[in-house]
Amino acid sequence: MSILLFKLLCLFIGLLLISVVVVAVRTLIKNEDKYAKKPGSMMLNKQGKFITSTNVLSEKDFYDYYDWTIDKKTRDFVFKKYDGKCAYCGIELHEKGWHVDPINPKHRGHEDVSGEDNIDNFNPTCRRCNIWKKTYSLEDFRAEIADQANQLTRDSAQFRLAMDYGIIQSTEQPVIFYFEKCI
Image (cartoon, rainbow, N blue to C red; front, top):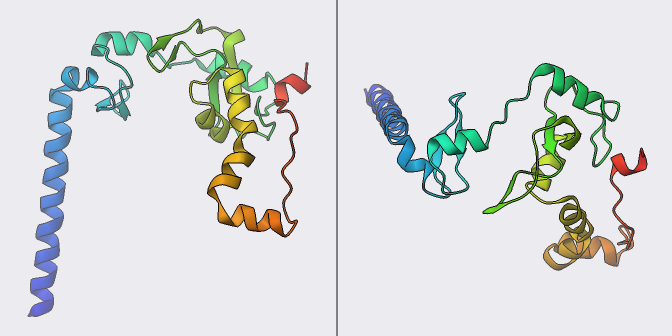
C-alpha cells in the first residue's frame, strides 16, 4: 500500500512540475517584448530556443541586429578556410559542432563596433575557442589566453602543487593563433 502511495505522490509531483514549466514558457512567449528589454532575461529566438538578451533592444531590433543565420555555402567556405581546423587553436574540426566566429563582432557588451556579416570577417572555430572568445577583439582574446597561467597560479592549489613539483612549467611565450601561422 505504501509503495502505491509513493508512486502516486511521485506522479503528482511530476505533473505539478510539468504544469509549472508550461505556465512559465507560456508567460515567457506571451511577454517576449517585455523580456527582450531587460538585460540578462530569457527569451525565445526564431528557432524556438531560449536565449539571454544582452542589451536593451526591442524584439524586432534584437532580431535585426543579431541575424545569426549563415547559409550552407558560406559555412562550407568558412569551414575550408583553414583546411577544417580551428582558426585559433588549430584542432581538427568535425563536420558538426564547430562555430562560425565573427573576427570583429558587431557588438561588444553595450558598445557598437565595426564587425560585418561578410565572409572575410568569419573564422571557423571549435566550440571551446568560440565560447572563450565571446565578443573579445583578437588582441583582447590573445591577452585573455596569455593570462591563463597567472589566473591558474592565483586560483588553483592543484596547479601550484604541480608547478612546485616541476610537473608543469609556466612560460612567457607569445600567443600565436593558428590562422597567423598559416599566413
